[in-house]
Image 1 (cartoon, rainbow, N blue to C red):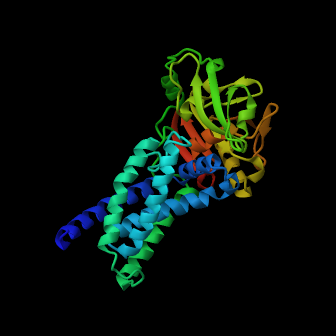
Image 2: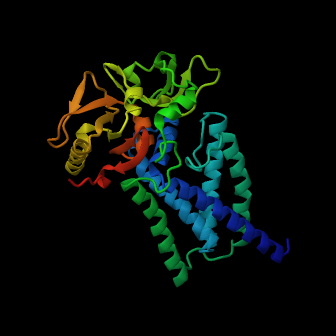
Image 3: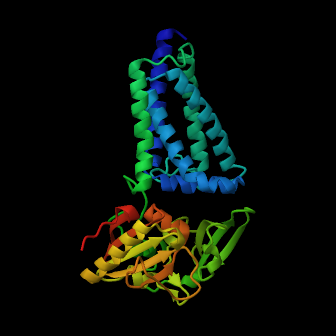
Length: 374
């Protein structure tokens, strides 16, 4: 191929592949919690559960590296070096997505986070489309010296690295910059549940629900009723789907599984349709709440008392009896159970607060961002 045509083709492939990498990295970097959940799913499927505690670190690193790689391709910074990384990355993920589509099927590969859902086969063919482009870029710049950085390239590399890793780190310590999920501000959770099940204003019949979970150790699937509390052990069980027996197709969304309950029964409708302001204090593990977070949650309870709002606490920790909890000396708050994955999907943090007004989400806060002044 004449060098001019190769140059034009390589530039097109470089920019196109760079835009795909940058977009994919960015939409995942702004939501590291979602990527960490997907990483945990893959680790569970392939039997590497012992690595799950590092899933958040890997999530931030993976998203940041992908975003940085895309930016460096777009701006032509050490293109040969980046094309090698891109080639290795695309080869690995092409194989992985092929396995996900055939040998160990998954519902969504998560290559574009929650911004754009692709099936494993769609992701595989997307990778097959991008892989030759990366090869063309590598071939075009194969004679470039790998580590011969100019001062401008050093400056751009530092800038892109800081930006890429900074976005994920910021969103981990706060909340996603862009919320691609149903539980965004302005959403009415109960109306979404009704829409999923097409129940109108009728009472939800929880006996119709079948929860399907995968054993993280053995990989076997098991069905639970919604009243069976064993599925709440997220260290042992991983959510797969929620099925409604009187519907033809299963519901493949966590909105369908949104359930708030305790030993006295399901109170999802009662809480989500509460008139006025409702403060949902979200706690993943009561034993791991920092002192500062407890004080901030106490301010939530005090704020609820001041404005006449209702405050409850939701947690995935099993509650064997009716439970009340005091946050740093606050008045006792009634606690209810919720699935761990649903909680993190809604909040995108370990601990925090979701505020509803007449059932509509009007505020979401990581615990460190809660600030109610009396």
